[in-house]
Length: 81
Image (cartoon, rainbow, N blue to C red; front, side, top):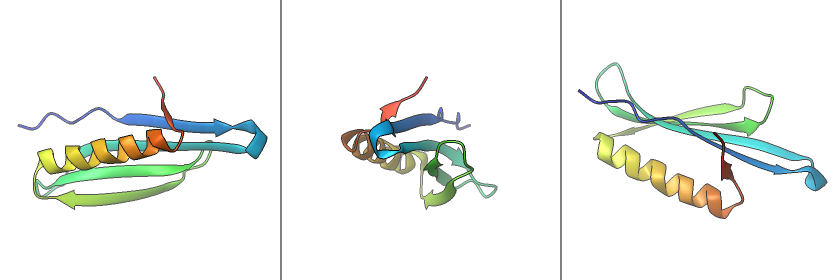
């Protein structure tokens, strides 16, 4: 049985540019057993947007999650909590 991965919460704040953004990533299972990378992003305080990316297995979804995290950190996001 697959143990769900923890949700990764990232934020990017820059008051001088009126920027307050969030980005959340998690790997979950779909109803059909597929591995799903769940991505949510937007301005802090809003619902934002949500995207689901299907993968053949959990390892591929976790690798995609790791690559996205590295990319976001390079763009100024930092981990929350």
